[in-house]
Image (cartoon, rainbow, N blue to C red; front, side, top):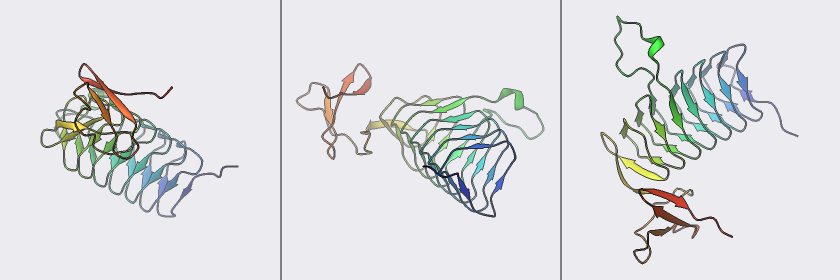
Length: 196
């Protein structure tokens, strides 16, 4: 039997928010009324979740992260401390642009490193790994390792979170050094080789 979500007494949970079982919400966080948060999540100190936000299961959002409207986070995503989401591409204080929010999608298993910035309107692929401090302003392929400002792909990461070495025997097949799971490069995209 699972238990309901828990939250620190300093957290503000607006009426209407949907929060899954065994999710934990820590100090000074604010969950807006329209937010949808899955099961087994952990939201650290000083996390804000907007009204038009969907967060999957087993998501970890570290301290000082604001998840603004029009951000969708799938299962098993890690959001590092103080990383940044945006939802307006060209904000001005004197001009209202709430009707111009851009959708941002973070797909299953992705890691968004500490202090990284995700510019709105893009998709981060499954199990992609965004390095600390990177600024991502375009779509990211599944399993891609991205670093820098602006972020550039410098390699591939396994589902376990290990950088994958050079291809085996030049055939486009990679192996995770920790799990020995194989990945195959097809065109410009990496795919996990399912065991039979």
